[in-house]
Length: 145
Image (cartoon, rainbow, N blue to C red):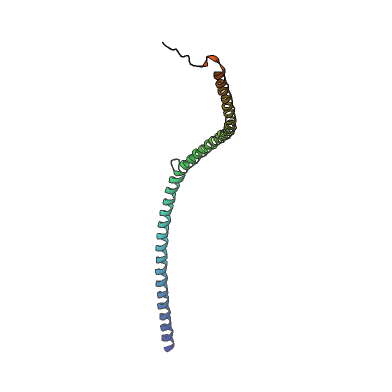
């Protein structure tokens, strides 16, 4: 009977180990199940957040259409600015040529002034000579008795 008692004792020990293992496994499965539920809830919230973000960014009233419109407006403004800069370049080229012409003209005006002054001096000299030589150039004096 010792043999049967030994086997029964061993069998009961194995059953207790099996029950402990089963209990441990059951607890682990429940914890895993809880973790999966929390993960699913988190994924559902993340999915909701992503959907809202998609709506806010890519929807017809979202950010992207506005950004696209803003970029198109900026491109148009840049094209207009390029056109204005080309016109400004043309004006600067004209101003540069005008400046060159004014510079040339100012040197011509200086020469012309020198020539006019020289001619005026000659005329003044001639008038002085004429007044000296002309008999009526003297002031007429009337002498009273």
